[in-house]
Length: 314
Image 1 (cartoon, one colour):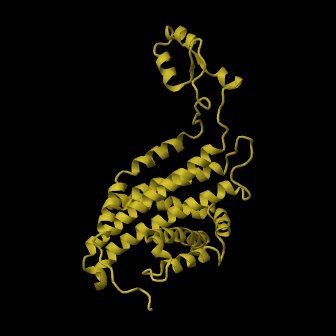
Image 2 (image 1 turned 45 degrees about the horizontal axis):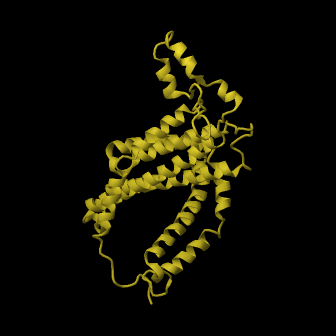
Image 3 (image 1 turned 45 degrees about the vertical axis):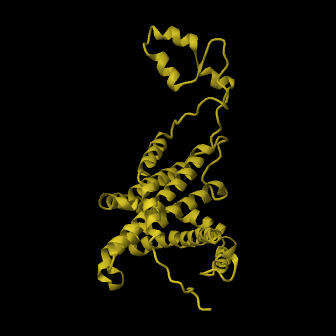
């Protein structure tokens, strides 16, 4: 029964996530593939029949469950406590892999997963500026983007695990044993690039949700009451040395005879979201090396030989 409960919690997330990710991202990738070929890409003579595959991808995104249905199901199943416990374990798994295989982007992915998990727990109890609950099945501006972000994370994780599997089991297969080191290095770079792209999407989505439902402060009576005046700082400097420079660095200060700086409003505060800011700053640092991996992967692609014959019979 325990095994059934664990597998059921995973299946309820993996099934809609797989359908949502493969069809949505697949259609986008096919569009880019067609655009690389120019007008030739939509003709019947194009190698690989890219035009037909692109049209098929659009259909696959709709039948067997439109993407909106998959997002709705995922927004319900991804908050399962049993799944979230396993998700937390996956973060540790990626941390351990980062120690032995830093080139796969596992460190980047682990930080992105941690940011997503924190954001999910935050919105499940937080409210917006009007006091309305953020995480609700009818508030799809919150649940659907978080579901999309989870798909990015799950896809990148499976990619990294596939690279590890290839490295460990590849020598046992004669078809891939020759030149395995180069193949593993190439796919490791691709995994690193994918992890970085996933981290970027997660960072963007979670930041918009965590901060986007708070009203931006304005120069109203309540806000201005909390501002320092230059005269007050000068008088306090004698009692508290250094307060003037500190206040000017971290607070809004109204100079004598001058108006506030020309901007939308006073700076926002991070009260209650300090951990989010720290996690996102850590994630930014974890992106170190991702562009080098992308350059290496791009260089490798220039050295790949392709067959002249079409991959479909005429």
